[in-house]
Image: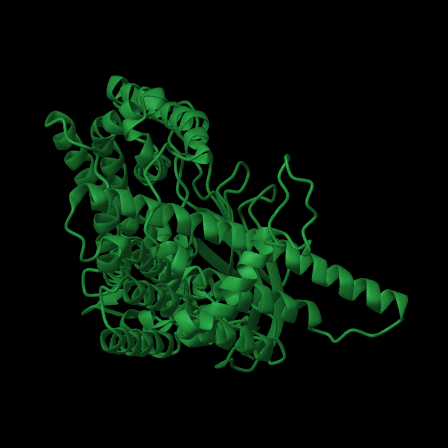
Amino acid sequence: PADVLPTPSSPTVPVSRIPLAVRTYARDAAGAFALAPVEVLLGLFVTVAFSVALRGTDGLDEWSRIAASAALALLLVFGLSLLRARGVIGDAARWAGTALVLAAAAAYGVWVADTRLETEAWRFAALLGAAAMALSLVPVVGMHDHERRRRDFWRFNALLLARIVSVVAYGGVLFAALAGAVKAVSSLFELKTPDHLYQDLFGAVFFALVPWVVAGGVPELVAEPAGEGRAPRAIRLLGRFLYAPVLMVYLAILAAYAVKVVATGEMPKNLLSPIILLAGIGGFLGSLLLEPLRRDPEHAGVARLVRVFPAVLLALLPLATWAVWVRRDQYGWTESRYLRFALLLALGVLAAAGVYRLARRREPVLLLVPVVLGATLLLSAFGPWGAPAVSRRSQEARLRQGLAQAGLLRDGRYTGTLQPPDTGVALPAADTRRTIPSELHAQVTGAISYLYASHGPESLRGVLGPGVERYGGGWEVAKALPVRPGCEGDEELQEVHASLPAQLPVPGLAGGTLYRVQRAANPEPPGPQAGPVQLQLAGTGLRVHAAGPERWAAQVDLHALVARLTSTGPDGCGPGDRFASAEILAGEAVRPLVDEAGRARGQLVLTEVGLTRPEASADTARGPFRLESVSGMVLVRE
């Protein structure tokens, strides 16, 4: 034929210079609509929705919901199309199943998916992984011959993976070529391109063309193999130069670290579980692609590694599981921690099955890998024991526990008042910030931030009450609580300075003559000074002296004010940060002046108070707080 490729022994010049791969993709795309019409329409629908979203306000959030639903539906509908092409199911079952999948995907997009919440990203990742595992099992549905099931499973997934990679690469080249052509034309002819032209091209190539061409490969994916023969060269190179050395390095590092943990008794690092997950999942999924090497004498070492790998992994899994469980006890469940734990348990099942097969001299696990991983991901996505539900309950319990220990919870509900967002309004006296241990503060603020980001502000209403949606994020809600973290070790509070806020109304003042007064403890003498009205400091007490025709003195007890101000904790916990700034409340500022005879002499209005705590010495412990300076106004009755 005129369109064959030339060979080294044949100088024939083909009529068409289009590469064979491109012509194959074009042929597949032409027949895709007949074989997989729903898949093609889903890609076109997502592409159109993407272009519309680009031209709207906040449209990409809605498009993300559409794209997530379409991605899940695409994998499952494509599996039904492949089953129909294999003759496993008929047209009626295919279209009934397609309708159910589309309805379920639409329900997920409308009522479940929410791109603003982090928990939905984890749920989508779990569902997408489960759908991919389900698609990988399509070639073995309805097949009973054990050896053929292993062969067809490998062949289908190898062809599908190769097709996806090559089509995506082709799409990238095509998009670059089209974008370059548009740029060249617009520059040469001085044309103005539409605002979203390049984004539209991107969507058309990757959201419409790529799924279209991949779906067009149904005949190749379900065709009977010509013969077994030797493993493809790419698989041989993958096993010898990538899978085996990388897996052995990872296992050696993990084994060495396990020996260190056992020898030293230290707690395993949090990074351990992700590394073991990477090694375990990569090891099992990689072994699926290396199935043809199982009987290749040249690659007996790789085949032996595939068989022995589950035993090594099974010995390492308890350490990784312990590492996750310890963090669960410390910080509670999150979706990430839950999925790590669930996948570690799934790897334990696969590793135990692999060890059993190794002991019985049977072939390595194959079909069990997508079944166990897919079931684990699916069960983790929904239900009362799924990752979102368990994580929310865990963090709500940690929040209630922390608030209860901070004295801010009664009957399961928050009893304080949240400071309004983005204002400088002072809190009422009953809700002034109190110091709590830094670990407890981190527990409360961490739970609030997680719940707000992962489950939305409505997840906090059951504990903190209505109104939390006014805040821009979890950290703003946490900052509105009347608590502050204390310092650890020797970083204790040493100095406090409190002042009356500017423009704060001070009601209940009587008439008389106004005197401005101030006093500092050092280096001034402790007794009264000259002047009509003077102050004398003594510990946490204050004495007001009045000179003139009628001398009198009044005692003012500031013990309660000092106790409140010194309970706030320092502003910082670093070196030299052992001080705090606070506010004098309106109810604390006005103090009556009554002399020794019980006669009312006027009022004291505090404007500033300074407190200090003596340093400890070799012979004495650190003393209590005492007044260092006082400023204010004295109203003397006429």
